[in-house]
Amino acid sequence: MGINLFRYIEDAKELGAYDAKVINTNTIKTAPWTIMKCKYGCSNYNSNLCCPPNTPTYKKMQEIVDCYDWAILVQCKSDLSSTAKIIVELEKKFFLSGYYKALGFGAGPCQLCEKCNMEKCKHPSEARPSMESCGIDVYETVKMNGFPIGVLKDREGEKNCYGLVLIE
Image (cartoon, rainbow, N blue to C red; front, side):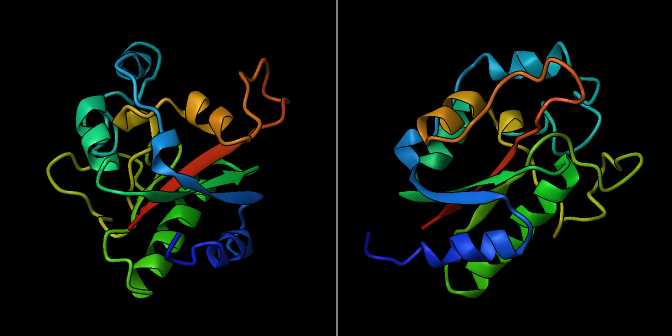
């Protein structure tokens, strides 16, 4: 790797991440079924600009991923909104370091507004779609990169939330 991305792992941890890894984008898997999990099973479908059908399809997301060679996959043990905040800050660090194509994806639905203004986002510098809302198979991507992930059987189970920043 011609660029030193590994120093950003510590930045992610300082921002509150539990762990982070530099990954090759060929380990990011997209799948057509992900939209179905959003459409049938999530009450946030079509309720905000960071959820389907307002996000890229899995095919479009694969085209986007193909524009990058590297990413940082971030593991958080906190809630979804904290994961999103970490990703936004990490994306900003990359951008200000000259990685102008840095693009972040959080976990779960956007929670910045109680009710989303579907006409125009009130927080465009903070709002990011989740990996899953853009067609990324989070479970497969996370497992391929050696992180733990599993279905929570109850609310007391160990929660692992994941975010991603594409870097070029």
